[in-house]
Image 1 (cartoon, rainbow, N blue to C red):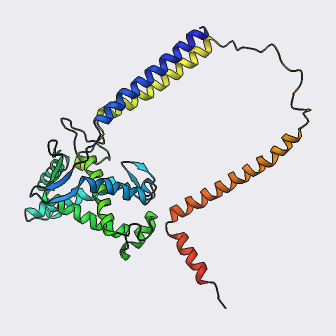
Image 2 (tube, rainbow, N blue to C red):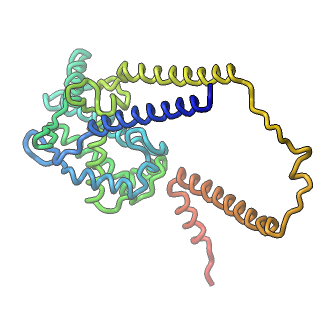
Image 3 (cartoon, rainbow, N blue to C red):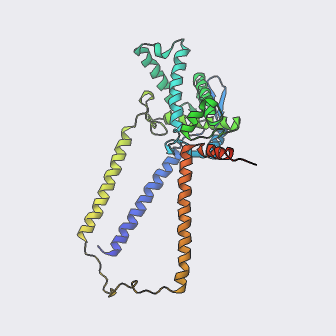
Length: 324
């Protein structure tokens, strides 16, 4: 194959790749999870506003964002994925609220009635109640009550509740990470919205905005067949393209050989010039800075995992100093 043909094939692959990326990028942009103007109960009580959700995302980013747990599976895993954590806790609490509404206790019910309330839970969580005309989401009073319970729970973690000290250490979250009650309320609104996105089905579809992530069979979050199909297809395509490259190389394995080769190693008898010797200082300085950067990264990673250990160690050191 001539070099011209190779360039044409390369151009074709690049154009096709970017066409696919642009097509699906535009499609994803059109189907992004909606941020409502308001979240209301069926009784008309405002649970959260759209600006609260956006401001809550800013609060989340201000405390480290995805270095403090993760959202939708993206981020560090020292702390939980807050969207998945919120959804799991919401499903358990809402199941209790639905049975309590009928004057019952879920754990005391026979299997048949438990299955009934699990179905009701799945129906309520997965139903898309977004009104496109008013851009509002409507939830039941029971679900709003659960959101408030979870807001109190997360406030204890991110603020200064003493009973959460051990859990904060496990999550590597310092005490009073969020100091203001209003900021905490907004971050809770953001967490609640991310969980809503994970469990709410897209309009006219049977999968959620996150394609049924995270996995939870009790509320119907099961990976759809298309996910397995496209994952397998992408792997097969990768292997097929690698195979084509190997096949082409085997068919055209005659390598170009340069006719002008040095008779000996040109660097063996090289005599460094003064400018080359001066550059050596620069190389040593850069190597030292890289080493310092690596050590700083090690220390940052260590105390990122240990949470408040750096602050506690500095307190111990200051308390051990004897002043005259």
